[in-house]
Length: 482
Image (cartoon, rainbow, N blue to C red; front, side, top):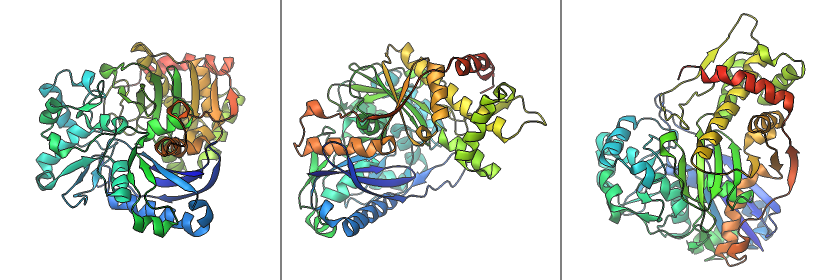
């Protein structure tokens, strides 16, 4: 038996065929472009997601037909927070404003004034990345979209609709709409009214591990799959990634260093921290919640530096490590690489990067050190904000593209003063989590076995000399303007 774990990300779609032991047998991926019409704007059309999904499944069907015949269910992971508004015919009405879109800033204050305790009821303080402020912005600037909207879905919900013809969502992703009471996991009429939305325009909610419909016969025949196999409710990418790395009990922490950086901490209770811009939603494991501290630009910042220097990311990272080994990292400038705003802990969407200590002798290695260090400091800010809300951290795993840079991970271990694990296949974590939800939806595994912890490829302990250096520079980072 195999499961298809499908991740619909901001930069691309990936599908992995895995067995019940989480061993990957085949995979395929396709990139997706992001449209940025103005500074701070970020959007995609849902048709791009579906085109990428069909392309990866077409590839798998062509290259691995016998594996596809063994697939018993499909699980979904998806980029969060982007409201997909569809009409009565299930067609998207407009490009979707993505999680890092900043245009709904003024609407956040409107929402906060209408529901003063909204941060304690939903997944956080109003932020332009979240759903409800975007609905208010659309009502003001694209009223025809709101007028013809029949239902609101999230990105992976739209893909499930394309697979099955069924409208549905689930609590992990629905929390980001700010229309869901996160403690109870139900749509809330007061929150809907504040956002100018209607309960009748929201889909039914299912659990992440429940079937959200069966695969259409025409698609099953196209991809050599069995007709009607279940498509799981799925989860937001942070929840799916955490589940894929075995984080399903209180104290488990997964730090994802991707385009953004996210500190995900599991807890059995709903412990919001809206005053520090921490997001808290249901987790993809039963009776748990996930607290998320967010750094808006993580590998995106490193990619930016690679772009302007003309040097590849691996080479930049190597230069920064060599600088430290030579005892010269303390000469580097100090940087706050908040190139796309700050979420946790300051909630400053309009903030931009800052740097101090530039000199005529500053070189690429020093700039890279300052950037890697700055992202690590921002992740430390997240952990401290979450611990202030009563969350405990017992184990730490690191995932995302940044996990391929062990020195960056060593920085985090040293700053957090605890070991970090680099699990095998962490770059596939969201797909693995999606596949585990698919396994539960097909009744192939019981809920008690929903999370399957992967083997650890490497464990990194804190480095005392690195810790001392970082701590000595932390006050300079704190003093940078925001």
